[in-house]
Length: 453
Image 1 (cartoon, rainbow, N blue to C red):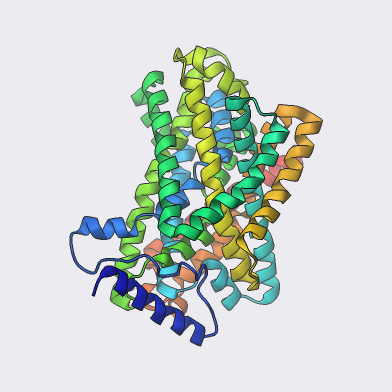
Image 2: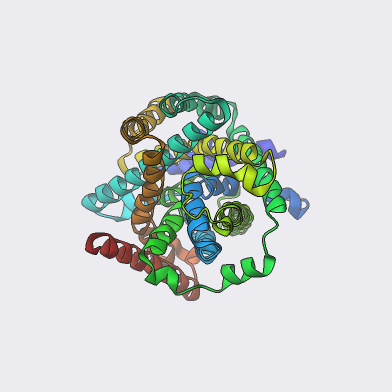
């Protein structure tokens, strides 16, 4: 039997079982649609599972990261590299848990919440997740609009309105198959990676200082309110709450055997996929901060916090004429890429929590419209400076929503009654709860400093 036939049989059997149980799989049009070879080289099997991790990694290098990383590098040099490293390690753990939940139970995180929590709790979690998606979409609109302005001179308001058209791009790719969607995402990730590789090579930062800042934390991160604000923005921009819902769903696009052995194998490959992809995201996020530290902090331009300012100063300060163009191209690729994952996450959350199905174009235009309106208003009233501040603020909002996704996820994957043999070991569960606690403590600290100061 060919791989395609295996995928078809697995998909048919699995969807029948789920329908029998009264619950359809999320994204059922692509569920178990990608063949997984049962034999052959390990590289061939890894390639079959590669894709979801890279789609998830998009959220870890979206335009919201740019604002927080730029501000952190310009103001505080390399100090916040530790926060980027820490948040990326948190992301690797949490995304592995999300993949485990989806593969082991056949439910995405939103469906699991609906199945096990009372309705009022579900509505609260749904509302919090929708806020996170809107905040993420807000960052994408601003980032894409700024990139269009920098590259083509399109006014910010016009660029924000143009972003509404990306709904049709997602529809076109989805209609061709999920692998085409993944290929589009990976292609743009290669563009982003290449642009920053060139800039890092030109910037030539001190390797020893970078490694020290990345692995040895400074107490000032917590004691300095301004630094803490940016640090929590980085965590909010890196560990994306809606990505946990997304990952738990799209790992089910693979036609792995729905047996204990097949699921265990799928969890191992899915975890490998997301870990590799998030290491790439770590490079991009660290690169943004490092380039900002070299170009701005070290040259007395600590006040640079706007993407537009960075674009104007990057080429002359780095001594590379195309540095600013590469920066803007990477930003545009980042904004375009983020639209794909935001669309899918919105669909998964809406269907999982409320069992409501909207046409993809309607769902996309609705969420994009909610994000475009505040961008247009703020741009009209405050100009580019206002949109830059709105971009950083959106990432802090994302960070505030993290506990509403992290706590249910850790609770579910730690519960043997729900996960059976796939429940995580006590040591991993303890580590996951520590991560959740760190997120909660940092958020409470930020709230206290915001309202007290």
